[in-house]
Each structure stands twice: as C-alpha cells, then as structure tokens.
Length: 313
Image (cartoon, rainbow, N blue to C red; front, side, top):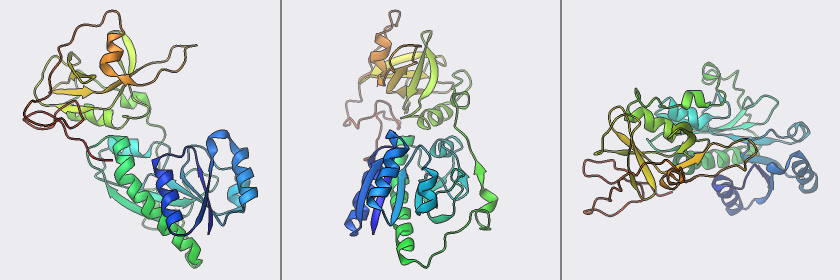
C-alpha cells in the first residue's frame, strides 16, 4: 500500500514505524505537520495515499483530509483514554499497566473508532524512557496490526462508545499542569518526588524554586546515602545536583531557567552548571561515584551500595 505518515516531528517512534512499514513492502512517505496544515493537504493531493498514519501528532489533521481519507492516529493511552498528557497521567497515577491505541481520526480528539490496541507494563522510569521502550514497542505492534486489518478490508473498527469493554473507561484527561506536578519538599517523600520528576523528565519539566529563582527540574534518580533538611542542596556529581526530600534525597540531572518576558527560550543544561551561573549559589561538595563498581550513566543510586542503573534505549 501507499502510506503517508503525518508527524509533528520525525522522532524515534515515527522512524520506527517508517522502517517497519517499509520492510513489509509498503511505499511510505512522510510529511511534517509542524509547518501547518497546507503541507499536509498538499502531500495528500500529490501522493493520493491508500492510508494515512499519524504516529506522533500534536495538532489536529485538517477536516477535509480525515473526511476524505482513512487516517489512523496513534494515541499513547489504552482504549477510552483521551487527552494530550496520557503518559504523564499514567506515571502520576502509578498505573501498573497502560496501553497504546490506534484509532480513526474524527472531529473529537481521541474519540474515533479503534483499529488496534496494545497493552504494556509501566516500570518505574522516566516518561522519555517509557516512551522510547515499552510505549514504542506497543505502538509499533498496534500500528502493524491496524495496517493489516485495513489492508484485509474485512475488519470493522470498534466504536468506543458502543464497545462494552471500552465505554466504561472513557475518560478525558486534560493537560497535566504545573499545579499538579509541583513538589512539596517539606511533605513529599522520595517516591512521590521521583514520580513527579519522572512524569515530566523531558517536557515540560517540574517548575520549582531554587535560590530564589524559578527553574524547571528535568529527570530524577534516587540517592540512598545522603540526607539533609527537606529541599536542601546536598552535593553535585557529574553535573547533577542532589536535593534532600522528607525521607531521603534525589539527584536532578538537568535544570532549565524559567523564561523571562522578551528573552529567548532557555534550554536544559546540567543542573550544577545552571546553579553555578547564579551569583549567590552556595558551594556544594562533589560526591564521587562509588569506586568499587563501574559508572552506569546515572548520577544517583538505587541500591544500598550506591550507584544507579539506567536502561538501554
């Protein structure tokens, strides 16, 4: 089949879907929706695809496109889940399992008929790690199944409202806003802090205050030895900073200063580097990595002997 991928960015998932469909013999083209709706319309007119697939889309498809062509949207949530912060909510609400749904585009966001879905477990990792691994594996499996069903021609997609297994679970979850993400350093334990950091590790970060300045915190790893007053900066290691919680401490790898009106948008940098740029920053001791085991790439520790484990992407 001739398949057109529409994506807000040609990210890792979009590339995987492109490669998998191409390997199966489909002719696959790509158009980026970040430039607006006209390039999407132009690509559809020129290529006249048999099927449109959107593996990662942050904006709505033009109505004339989805009305005249079958368009499949990949949503990183189980059937019935709707809204733009699906993985954020899964981590925040400690869902043990989650899913990916491939549904047909229509006027209402994430409300279309379901062509395929695939569940996946939710390990205690950051959102970007979850997206690149479990969620992407499930998304590729669901897309390939949906494409096979469409090509077969006999499969009828399931209406969410009419499916007795899905209808009771239909729920709209809006943007997970900073008010919900905010860390209460005096009262939040380490697990709660890590959950908030992991749910926002790539974007948007967790808005916080350090040394009287508003910054976004990106990423988080547990520390098993250092302790201090809740919220206190304890140490630095490999560019990360360690901050005390109510019952422990966490390592924060990156910070991003909040944008001031009229300034260019700042970007994430190693946390220690951002703090060092503040004129009144205190000197934090540097904590060496445990000498008796190889460095694994994360600045914190997850075991009683120190150190931290990271997963291969």
